[in-house]
Length: 120
Image (tube, rainbow, N blue to C red; front, side, top):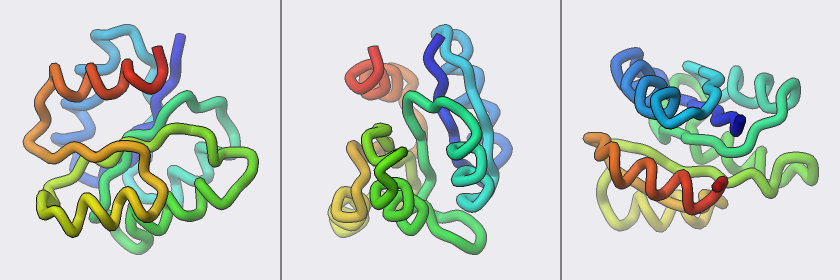
């Protein structure tokens, strides 16, 4: 079973993403702050990360830079899932090392197609 780490500070969004991924057979680990996501990442085998940008304290982009700078974790695909829908947000995310970029509201089919592209 593939494991996806979801870093999302909004409980409703977290619950929706978890429901979608579990229905598709993925194991989910949750972090509501980027710092917690980095800790979880060090202690578990993660196949993919779904990362929000706007998080309390450390941003999702800063967390991505940490993940991509670490030889142990840099090959884990990171999908940004954010309400920030401007082109400059997409460019910033990809420049930080994110592998793909989706905007909220969540489109279940697009989300699953994107995740499968990286880990199936």
